[in-house]
Image 1 (tube, rainbow, N blue to C red):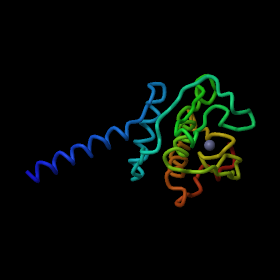
Image 2: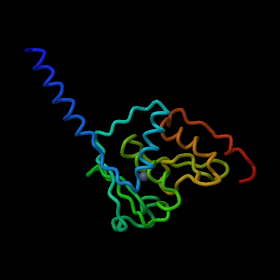
Image 3: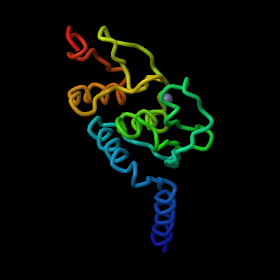
Image 4: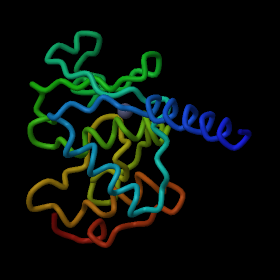
Length: 167
Ligand SMILES: [Zn+2]
C-alpha cells in the first residue's frame, strides 16, 4: 500500500512538473528555438525553461525606439517572462536565428548585454545590445564562435577569422 501511495505521489509530481515546463513556441520561431536547444545540448548545457513562458509575436513593438538597438525588433520582458518579436522587422527576416538566440540568452541563460569589438570591427558577442552577429549566408563559418561564446562566456576565445586583414 505504501509503495502504491508513493507511486501516485511521484506520478502527480512528475505530471505537474511536466505541465509547468510547457513553453509556448509559435511555429514561426520553432526552428530557431529547437536549434537553440540543440546547440545547448551540444555544449553540454542543461536548459532550465522553468521561468520562461514563451514567445509573443507582434508587428507593433511600440514601447521601444530605434535607439534600443536590436530591441527595436525583439526583446525579453523580465516581468512577464515572454520574448516579444516583431515579425515585420528586418532582423526577423534576414538574421532570425541570432535575434532569437540573443533573446533566449536573456530569458534562459540569464545573460546580460556585452559590448566589445574585434580588430575587424565585428562584435565579440551575440549579446551585444546594438547589433547582431552576421553569420547568415556566406558568413556561416562565424556561427560556431558566437554559439560557443553565448553558452560559455567564461571560456570565450578569439576566433581565427577576426585576425584576418581583409573582410
Ligand atoms: Zn538584449
